[in-house]
Image 1 (cartoon, one colour):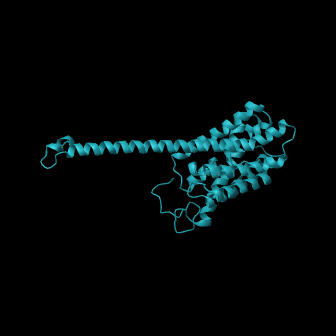
Image 2 (tube, helix red, strand yellow; image 1 turned 120 degrees about the horizontal axis):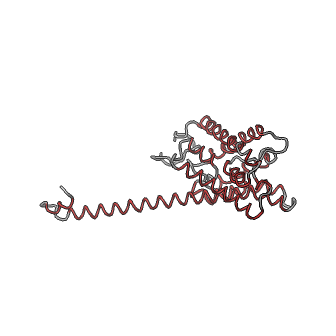
Image 3 (cartoon, helix red, strand yellow; image 1 turned 120 degrees about the vertical axis):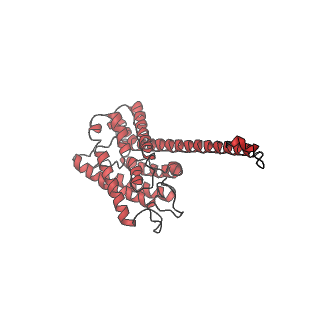
Amino acid sequence: MENSDLKHVPGLKGAGESYDRWAAANRALASRVDNFRLVKEARRAMAEIFGTMVLTLTFAFGPVVQTQTGGLLPTTAILLAPGFVLAALIMAMGQISGGHFNPVVTGAFWLRGVFATWRVPMYILCQLAGALIAAALIRAVYGNIAFLGSTVPGPGISNVEAMYYEIIFTFIFLTVILNVAERARIVGANAGLAIGLTLLALTVIGGFVSGPSVNPARSFGPAVISGGHALDVLWIYIAGPTIGMVVAVIFGYMLLCVPGDRGGPVGLGRTADPPAPSVV
């Protein structure tokens, strides 16, 4: 029997119209939910583009300005700035996108099973786009100098040695991130401070050996826009952080057992709330 015929059934007068109104309201609600999800994903994408762009600008701007001004910008400022900026970005954008700004951070959360597979390509493409925008802006203002702040092995450091350093630095960096994150999100002042200080320390230690990068997107943007030697050694800053990511995730499982186990401490993908039906 058709829904419109219900009104002809004794005792069910008006039932057909009521059902039609309910169905129309349900469809309108579903449409609003879909629109909300689309807006939410757009906000995530914008946050990742903006955050990665600002982070790449901070990393790359220093060497370019130092070269342009003949060394007037102190090296100390160049090394310290990225850590502070990352901490600020996490505090500002963490609630929106999770504060990844880095393909290996996104990949680590995915390997841990707390980040949706379909969202991984969107995040990585947004991160690469943000880095490309940053490099293009720098080139438009200063021209192609200092490899646009690209990551390249330091003096006397071979490509293999640089990759070795990138594996170690990324492993340390991601181990901190995985232990302060809430599922697939990096939120809050404490998380931002811990991760920012870790990046600051790694930048000071590794600034003259491999960059360091610990972020393939940050290396990708300037290398592609600059070309030349920076593009030739880009593989170091993709392979090294990727290997470091895998090692960090494996170490995380060993350190605090399986992240899906909610019986353990908060961290490494655990939160105090009940298990979610799906990954973030």
